[in-house]
Length: 194
Image (cartoon, rainbow, N blue to C red; front, top):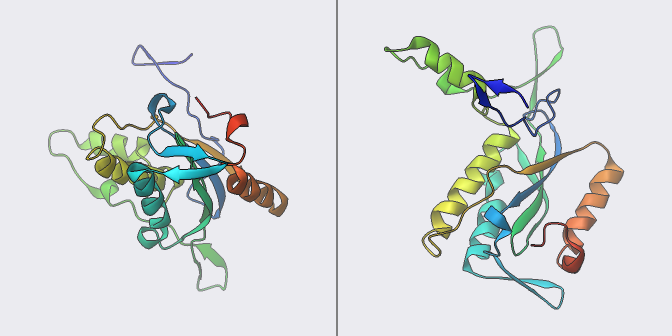
């Protein structure tokens, strides 16, 4: 394992050669801490959401209201995790030469200055999730769900990371859509079941 400043580092879980702010479809799984069942239970193959589960569902369905370039694919709340597809579709623009250019999101914090340590903001900008990326969207979602879930259950927490899969073709997209739709019926075989 690598060390940074003489401390062990956790290797990144994302594909290092991929821009997670680029247009495409992403299968996202977010688990609760220790896979604790905070969201409800499966009864006869159907998910019965409790109040925290309803919060998790509500705020996922609102993602595209806050990120206009996001379209939602199938989504399900399970007892201890959520599965969903996020589709990034940022508009392209045409430059003066008629070439298509992808529109980039601005990370305002890149321009901030710290009078005591001007290099600190540059370093933070390099390691912080960039605006308009899957990490930023998931972080926002987890944050708002946590805020309201803790009003119901003070110990609510997410697992620190999340699972992602870049969906590369229509066949894979359809397979994942079906997996999500059928997940409650297949709960007994679910690898995230604790």
